[in-house]
Amino acid sequence: MTKQKIFKILLIILSALLGLLFIYSGYTKLYPIEPFEYTFVDLGIVNWALAPFVARFMIGLEFFIGLMLVFNLYLKKFTIKLTVGTLVVFTIYLLVMILREGNNGNCGCFGNAIAMTPLQAVIKNVIMLAICFLIYKFHEGFIFGKLSSSLAFLFFVSSMTMPHVLNYVDLTYSEAYLNKPEDKFPLEMDTLFNNSAAPKTLSKGKHVVAFMSCSCMHCRVAAKKMRIMHEKNPAISFYFVLNGDSIKLKQFYADTKTQDFPYSTLKARPFIYLAGTNLPTIYLVNNSVVEHWVNYMQLNQAEVENWIK
Image (cartoon, rainbow, N blue to C red; front, top):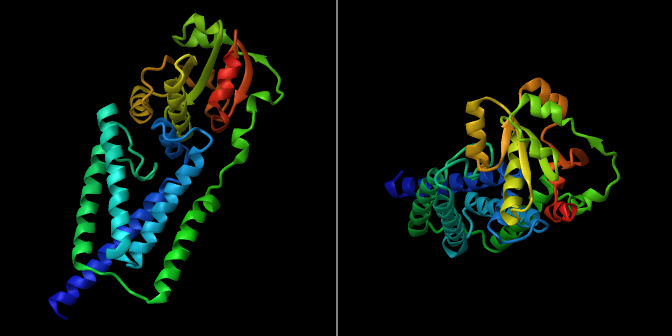
């Protein structure tokens, strides 16, 4: 076998591996998908209602690019150009993240499956761009005649459909959750005050009080959502009651970037007594009375603002 043929095979393999990396990247963002959804709200691109659809479109785009690269379809004509454009956009976002927040936490490139800092993700993207350049310069890809266009169309449709099949958009997400009837009950503030450094002012007025474990993945997702909600409207009073040691607390803040939120820590027994075991527990408290007990996925900024009013 000649060196030229070996080099050709190497480029085919590189294209396929690059494609598998895109597919894996898209898949890992699906579970949980909420942090990826919140990214688009945080950037100001879309609102809370549209974010789930935009997130699934971007995951579908990763699936589509991945399949086209795996099968080496339309590489020079279309696929490598789309791949480079996507990588450049992702890299610009990562650079903006570094400028705004520093090289901290998980960039989310592989969801929660592989934690990477924004700078590590930038380096990864630069390497992928170099591979794209190599493929574009020396490899035409496969040509299957009319079958190529049929395959490309099939890949696009299946890629855009798959995120909705694997993790569909819950349309009850946007229902008026705070209008649902439920029994009000007093939050036992003495238990909180006697076992933590929570301020007594928490017993007066309206506050969103979130009980979260520092090691709970869903709690971190909830904290990220509340951070974005607070950035959109600083008038919303959030208070965190956290359970976890100093190391887990540091990791929690590195991931969620909520270190500026008022908080107190609570030991396991009083924490479970107030919050239960199904975390995160989010209470909408009015003068020490829990008026609403909400799921973080159904926590709606407009409805919380109406509740405050």
